Length: 288
Image (tube, rainbow, N blue to C red; front, side, top):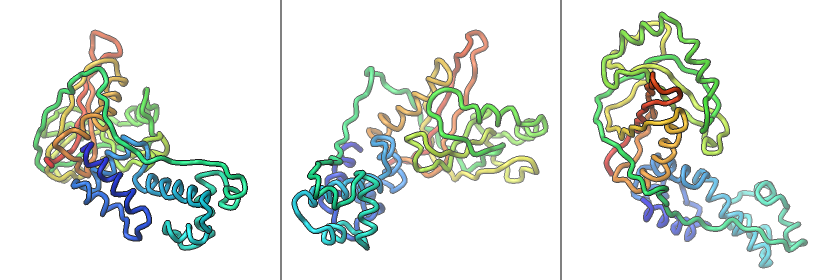
């Protein structure tokens, strides 16, 4: 995947001024699904693919301004339909209007990316692949703010709000492994890497039943394979570190790509050691 990522960066550089530089075409050039490529790119760079392309275009436009090219020519060169639209985007990125760049002769750039992966500590990630038929996540959910470290109090409140009737209904429906209460995350805002915005979080179970009754929500999932990452340690830090390593270290080097389905996990707190837990992270994947 690293080779493909860097090949795509070169491809973008060679086509910055092309009118048909679409995100779908770029993912196709990478040889992986559009969803997988965008997700991995985002976790590694901290930017959406469209943000990266925009910033590279504006950086090159900045250099063109310093080289004396006309604002009109530059705006249309990089795909802007009007000088005003270009000026707004340019000022938002650089803090200056194009005319101020020419007057002040101050340099600013957004360099081309290059991807490398450093596996910290030299540890091998333990994982297994499990195939599952189509099923439903069933439970209760709410929109919660993005949070990568520590306890998310909104999720805590969601858990506390589950009624005894809802718990009984979930346990009655639960009929496929893992036979645990799971935490499901989906519909994340595109700025999730910067912990801005939110995602939908569901606490529930896995079931093949389609009739769930009132008081619970249902999220259908198609049959697919799952990469399962067991982890054990201080909760929630170990779980969160595992999740980060899956996207930043395992996926770029793996023979699997992401499937567009919710990610889920479960946690079993140690009754003997406070704050210690066994967890599993389940990521939907398919063989490349």
